[in-house]
Image 1 (tube, rainbow, N blue to C red):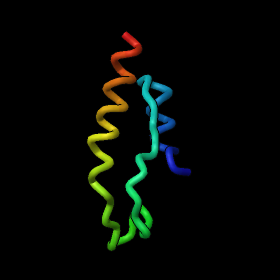
Image 2 (tube, rainbow, N blue to C red; image 1 turned 90 degrees about the vertical axis):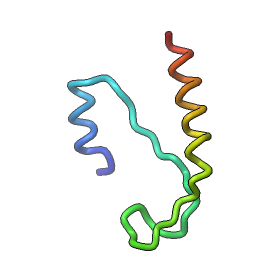
Image 3 (cartoon, rainbow, N blue to C red; image 1 turned 45 degrees about the vertical axis):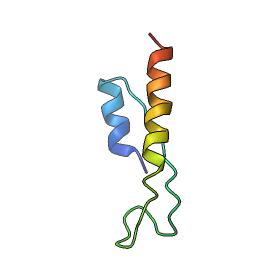
Length: 55
């Protein structure tokens, strides 16, 4: 059920959803979640590269 609402939006607006690995022992909605923010620049590079490739 991860993207149930998001799937509805995709029926109206093109897009995609992906999981960004952040290496935390706690789940997404756990109060002790402490993601590795070093994953953010990597994701930006990947998404930027993807968007440039579909011009």
